[in-house]
Length: 203
Length: 346
Image 1: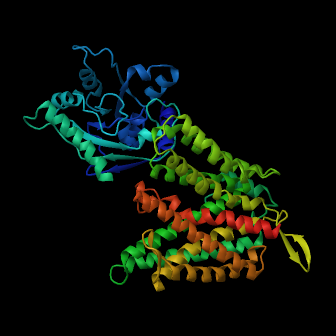
Image 2: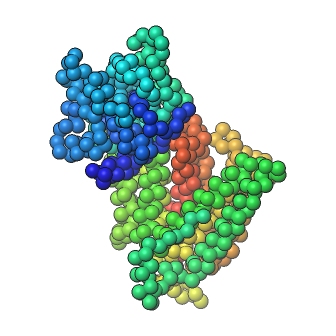
Image 3: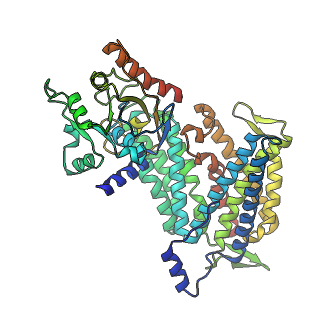
């Protein structure tokens, strides 16, 4: 398992040539939710690989069960980066993904989530789904860290199988929290703005 | 200071092979030693400047000087490592450099979703293929013709098949220029190692580099002159530069810089003629040719960067050195140097 993990990190580095930039934040092993824009299947893997090793070991990307449970290789890979698989089709009230995430996080893991829901192939980011809000509400102690992944959609766009090994950027911003009296809509659009600001800073 | 650390098994291997021969011809070894001494002095001066920079010197210039020295150490280490491994090693190293340069180039130029498959072919298949062909060195010298054809015929076809007509010509041209400059042109540098060169001694032609590794010296000479010329152009431009050649493209390239660099490169070329098959005056002329090509490479890359609105390829992706910034002159000079050498000395 350790070997597969190392290979995955190396492969992610070679294929996406990422550079990590911590902007107004520092690596920390405290419990966090990293939330990022989503344009490629590689997103979760690359962001996970881009974290320093001691943090990576405590961080689990949340990924779609229907995709990652198909076939032996994908299952093995998902296992190696300790993915938390969520069933997108069977969301029920008593088994909501948010509860599952909170349960699986225990008191040591951090998560990587993509609040747009599914991969986006437009220029603008989609609206955020409400999961991030409920996570923030149920676990107010978590640091919610915005991340902007640049160029991933060119490396492996939606609907392609083979990646083109270009270069990419991971920008990790300052944490946000749910403010007193903030509504769901307000919070979600503020979180989305935080990611967009990281993109605009880069340019 | 990077130093070459040999793994234990290699040391053992070297000790066992009693009749171990230096992988370089004697002249080349001297040239490399000279460059090393210069670099050590340079690093030393850099350290001194760093300490006293607060009061007397502009710290930005000191920093850029030290950066340059560091990247020279790297270039030197890479080149020597490749040459020690052998011809194939050098070809592989240049292949990796070309791959990285092309990836910087494509990252900087916007492409559309429809270019994805074409880009895959270019980066993952054609780039390695070119260097494999250089290494195979077959009689018909396929490496000289295949890649431009693929770039001109295959790439536009593949993009057309993606069924997206928007800015079609522009997209094809971007990829084409990327391949030709970063991969095709650069591949002529390691191809130098496969030339069978002849010199004329007393009216009769003699083979110059038969089994004596002299061609490694020629490659080293070429890279050295190209890199020194970059600095000379910058230095002369700063010192006496008045007439900017194309102010909307690059404000630091001046006529005086180009002429000064060409003249001093000629001197350097003549100074190092003994590692090449050239007579000293021939070495001087060829150094001028390298100098002019180096300028062409620099100004072309500046134009591309200005068009894209980036300062250099290094700032594009934070933390990366920006390989393309370092090798633009090498890319332009390599095919010309190769063809001139091949035409007159084989």
